[in-house]
Length: 383
Image (cartoon, rainbow, N blue to C red; front, side, top):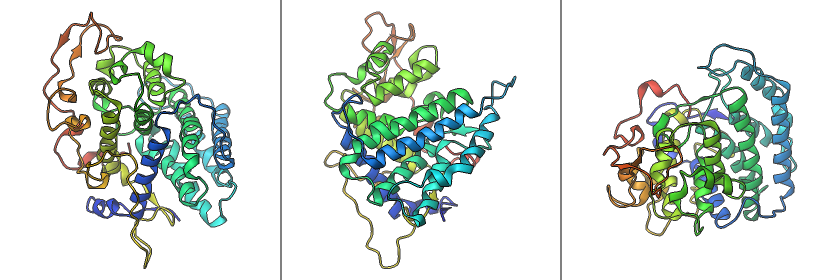
């Protein structure tokens, strides 16, 4: 049975060297490597397991059609109908994981991850911790040998993209709160992995990171690029200048190449998701993604598939990554996030806009980059 094991801040050291951490890191980096240079619109032949996961997600999505949002005067908190939605998911989750090739003894662990993947029914929120639960679900299928290395492009472009469609619909219909959001200083209110995988997809692309703030570019490439489909969704959900509502992404547009964006986002994912106690204290461990190594087992040491040579392994990166580190620089310099100019005119003006009035950005890191310990009052939230 899957259960929590990260109960105190001191458990973070054991988590970082656990078999579960190693499997998850290998999975997210392997997917990133698999999508490099590919397009969402590329013709892919999904394996039977990928097709089964997509069909499973269609059943999850169908619950939304059956549970309309309640009429409420509150605009601040999520719609209470989401609790009904989540209760209906709980009723069918056991049948959802009856996938081809999945053994009976593996289903409870998969069901636990799947149930955690769509938000919290009490707080009516969703964040990167719930996204991590779905990544764990997919990772388990890979560890069981039900996804091959050749399947990983379709796992991302077909299965995970279908998951994104489901949770975006939940966010819109039930007005889910961002769980543990950093607000303007966060990468995104809800997601992280599609930005990392999407940046990896764009390595070698003719589209430079400087075009991230351009809504026309986002719309043009949303059907081919995971990263720009996320940007297009942001423009759909938010109004106002991009550098105001998505400051981190605006800062990233100053990084000169996608390879640096990709490696920097991996470092940020480790620091701001995998090594954030308020997030991973909710993570569940089971017989596949173990907290402790099995007696007599050889420690899991899996290959690093996407980091540039010479970069430290992700598990060794200290929490609270500096914003400047995403650009691969040691401090504020050309391409550093801390020196991104702020455009003062209009929501569509990007870094190369000739009409933009430019002023230096404040010389400060975001709250995510502060050298502080685990925030005590955030321990109850899951991002």
